[in-house]
Length: 281
Image (cartoon, rainbow, N blue to C red; front, side, top):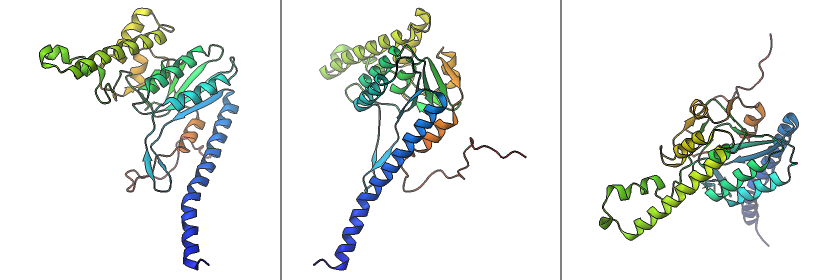
């Protein structure tokens, strides 16, 4: 018969596994409730694509998330289940990186939703693939401190930006370039052309063809580094359909996607949200 210490150890191990699962389910229920509240308030279909560094399991292993094929499958299903005439509110919070295929699939699905207005909300940042989604929206509502980013192919061969690879043949004679680099240059040229053409198609639906072509080149051909922040003011100057302001409910939803707590917190403040209603005298 197991002794008391064995039973206690088993109970502790069980709790280590069970508590995170219960916490995840409670958090998921709160997120769904917040989304339903937003839908009831705005009479829209609300879809959230929020990527944070999260910790998984009881060991707290960091998990980095980007737009991937699972995201595109889920978002496409959500759009397919949305009535054609219903507006879509799409909340995007994603860092640089992610699969081009997945981002392009979501962008095309948003553009095909012709019956209802598509609004993308950017509370903090929508970089890379997130920016590609913004190019497909009818309106992009940004927090005044939020940023977008370039959409140039950033990782050819797993690590090299396409724009940088394309400079190699201009800087070195062919006999000094190895075969692998020549192959990467060829792939980089194709990737950059494909992205530029895709962005051009999205932009030509809302602006003059020449301007759309110039903006597509600016965003896709390595004008800036891949993590360059395009501010609200700059996005408006570029001709993107950006507006300022954010429903309070979106900030509340973001609170339910906390960043994984580091061992030594680097930011501390009294948590009084700016959207709290002040008491009237």
